[in-house]
Image (cartoon, rainbow, N blue to C red):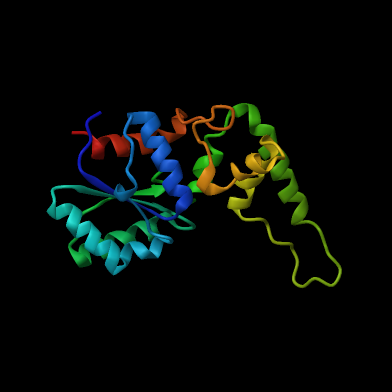
Length: 205
């Protein structure tokens, strides 16, 4: 696929690694470091640095692609970002993770594209969470106990699958993950259909 001139804006290093690998896997496009912006938090998409970069990309005939987490309210996040877009007169296309229609984040997307053979790991995790909220720890106020973050869940998934050596442990970290490993992930999953269409529609000439 021949691609347009573009700049991609994402929330963090985990997104940078995933999208670079996903785009190369699906479209054969190697995303240069200078074409992907790590916002280090979704609110920074509304910062002056991102605003200047977007305007520069547009002025040079390119397209801005903004991919953020929907988090706990899909409509609120979408309306917030699009309102900022209108107020500042900038041009970009928006996709909210995990699938551009539901609440959630990158970690929800990842959970939906695991190798199905590994589903028992998440089944065990769900049981763990169910048990955790029922525990009553004497002297702790208030109950219930805190459910670990989704990032911890993905970390635990990979930790269960990878070895115990230092080099294997390094592969668990967000910056070092290999999403092209079919024993762990399925980058051809139907769940990624809306994301694939978004990228194809906006990057192809």
